[in-house]
Image 1 (tube, one colour):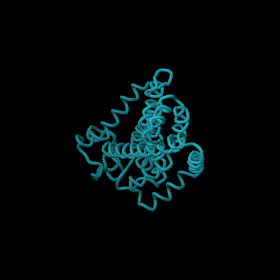
Image 2 (image 1 turned 120 degrees about the vertical axis):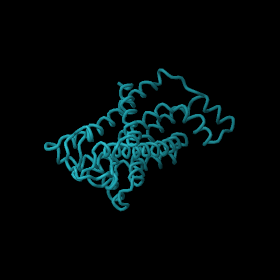
Image 3 (image 1 turned 30 degrees about the horizontal axis):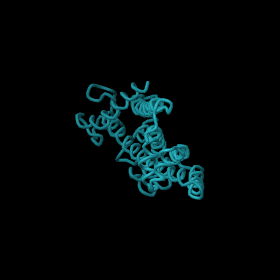
Image 4 (image 1 turned 90 degrees about the vertical axis):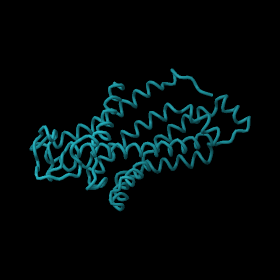
Length: 266
């Protein structure tokens, strides 16, 4: 299933970033062919203002992927740094950082994100930064747990005895031995970011027109569920497929990085 999902993910990436280069229409092109049914020229029909739905879907998929990848990258870096510091230094630092994590977990993410994003007119990078600010806590907790375990190993004790600094021990010895769980959680963060961005945009609090994302497209066309189902089901299927594919890839990576099948790299 993971390999099939990887193929689906690659196909969606090609669709989103290569498709617009070869497709006849741009997502901003407007014509008089409003609500045209699917045809050879417009495989997914046209919207209320005559935009080609396929071109719009390519742009929306690319934008959602772009936001999700940035969110996952930022959340992974922040989570790994916080978790590794907490697990290695312990004591006051551990308590302080974990209390911060607990506090962040009880903050209503959607409400705060909506307020912040609305104040910045729905810029994609603001959406990404806000989502990343709420996506790193689970990664930090997992990283802390692994760091607590690894920091008692002989090769870490040897590094301390040789006078290695804390940053060197964390980034040269600890992080490389956690690369499996880091990769898995980064992958799952992508899936979570796709769905969270879609939810915000569906509520009109994420990406704003004239640009678009999968959530925006679904929000604009959910009223056509019965009358013109192709306008709703196209973006909906892509959104669900993208989320499921990334989740299955994460599951496959988790199996591949199973600690029972790998050796610690000193």
